[in-house]
Image (cartoon, rainbow, N blue to C red; front, side):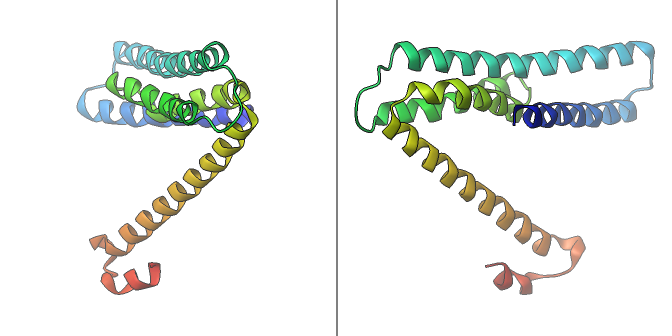
Length: 167
């Protein structure tokens, strides 16, 4: 699974940078300095996103290992902190104008491998169920949104007759 995540992260970074390069070429003329600047931007973009994801993932593991001692029962505070750490990482990297999805993926991989096992069994089971439910809701919402946009977007000239079919 980690190999798949690394491939996904690198393909996303390359796609974002290719788009930026195409836009840059349309605005400015091509030069050697522009090419060097593009490579520097690539490494800054990648290391900023990966660094923040790594820092937040490792810090969450250490936070749950040393501060939150496993006590019996469902721990609501641990659940709130567990969910808020990737959100904080996303907001931090968006403020730096880098890729939030890369940070969330890296932070999520580290948290699933290290942080999750610092919780007690009841909280871990609840978080597994909650994460699966939130993932399914996000998938349904995305496909519903894309379906409605494809029917309502004016170049397709489909109109509003297919909205009841989607619902």
